[in-house]
Amino acid sequence: MTLPSALKKISDTIWELPVSYKEGMLVPARIFATDKLIKEMDAGVFEQVSNVATLPGIQRYAYCMPDGHWGYGFPIGGVAAMDPGTGVISPGGIGFDINCGMRLVLTNLTADQVKPKLHQLVDRLFARIPTGVGCHGFVKLSQSEFGSVVEQGSRWCLKNGFATQDDLDMTEEGGCFPGADAASISDKAVERGYNQLGTLGSGNHYCEIQVVQPENVWDKELASAFGLNIPNQVVIMFHCGSRGFGHQVATDYLKLFLSVMERKYGIKLVDRELSCAPFHSPEGQAYFSAMKCAVNMAFANRQVILHRIREVFSEVFHSSPDDLGMRMVYDVAHNTAKLEKHATNGHKKEFLIHRKGSTRAFGPGAPGLPECYEKTGQPVIIGGSMETGSYLLAGMPSGADAFYTTAHGSGRTMSRHQAKKNFRGDKLQRDMEQRGIYVRTDSFGGLAEEAGAAYKNIDEVVEATEMAGLSKRVARLIPIGNIKG
Amino acid sequence: MPYEFRGDIAHADIAFNAWNETLEGLFKDAAEATIKVMVENVPAVRPTETVEIALDQTNEEMLLFDFLNELIFYKDARRLILLPTKITFGRSEAGCELKATLQGEEINTERHRMNTDVKAVTMLRFSLTQVQEGWRATVVLDV
Image (tube, rainbow over all chains, first blue to last red; front, top):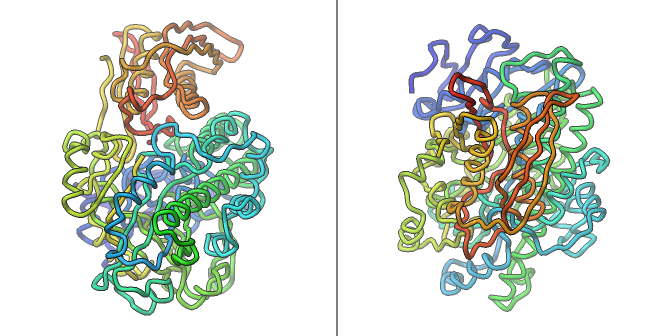
């Protein structure tokens, strides 16, 4: 596409739109991309990242990561840090699927051990982890019990036999954002979500069995520290979020903010999807609490799914999850807003960091990392397309400028509508099996939308994050089995 | 089929335009487009369950937003795929109101060819406008 004429190249991986680009911009917008990736960005990225720069209280820059593409409100890959005292909180900077995130789990199995049982494993995972439109989970809860889940997140799972303490230690924020109050969520959100704990959903949500081939290990030392020690080691990666509960929380507060933003707070914005409220307003604080409930639901959801994955591997290999080495590498959130302290002008200052389709990537020594990752930096799990593979990265000390944030995936280059025109799900499934990737799905239409060619080249995206000093490549992960909703 | 999916205004999400001579027709078209994103063979959805809904909003545009979100809500809360059979509009203290009869059935993957889950109606380019020929809407769904 034709790049905006105002776009200025700052370095090999930083592009900037100045405040003069659009009326109302309070800070410049910065996009992390190589020459090739910036040319592949769709027009929506430039429109939306410059819209983000108009939000009251935004600090430094409105950012977009190398996997950025057209979203709603923020672009996917968008990052905005607000001054909590003067700034706003915006559901459009977090997304409807609050705490959509990634989890990576180790095994001590090799590809040679898993491949003979791959069909059995994938078929059982597909049967045992509910997928697809409107799926309900196997954990039966009352609506009041669900209130405990959303307030406690993975801690609820630990109390109820779905987690180990080590799982919680290996989850961002220990699997629970403190300050989640179920009084801030609607009955409708509860009714929509209380049956969905332990479900994958659909769209780009998946659970994948992957192999770490020796030639795909970029940094042996970091890989070893993250538990990747065996040639052709098998790992499990999955991607899902807060399901209908989180979607309803976002919808409820989008509507509330639309009703008060201009009338009560005098905030006028160029895009209604960016509707917001001052962070310290009653509405802003209520949303922050409700969002935390959805974040916790997503942590619990991924934790219950992990429990099921362990059961399936245990059944198929007749060994306990411990004996199979099924330990979590990490769990990272994509769609959140968090209060974090970052260095600015020589001292630490608190910011409200919106990350939408982007990943926190703390460097070595950052507070809040588990002890085992203090020297390595935070593991960052980048989900690629189901055809091309994914990555494990590590946070870098040089990530400070972007508030220690990096990409979250490949990033789409083709609309879902176009992908369904270009690809057939049943043919794609057969082709992938010939290439050694066994896929089960509820929807061939949904599978076609997720074809590898609909996404950017993940190798280029992660290389760009490393060149920009946001995250370092540790290993590339090759899919061999996948379940999709 | 007075609706059309668009690949040019959203990549990760699904956008459509709908148009109809009447407001009731427009709401029905937008409902079918939303359900079509989730169920490939919409005619296979049998009208075995009935749900009555009543909504109140400041204007017709926000009424459409709430109405489509109701369909998405029932898909998750009760696994029901619903389509409107009758919609009536009236004036209310807030602005305007809608009463609708929705009919459909529980998701049945044996008979329903499922597509992609719809998470929400977004405000991106969301619009409902009265035009010379009737009504026209643009909707972007988060999937």
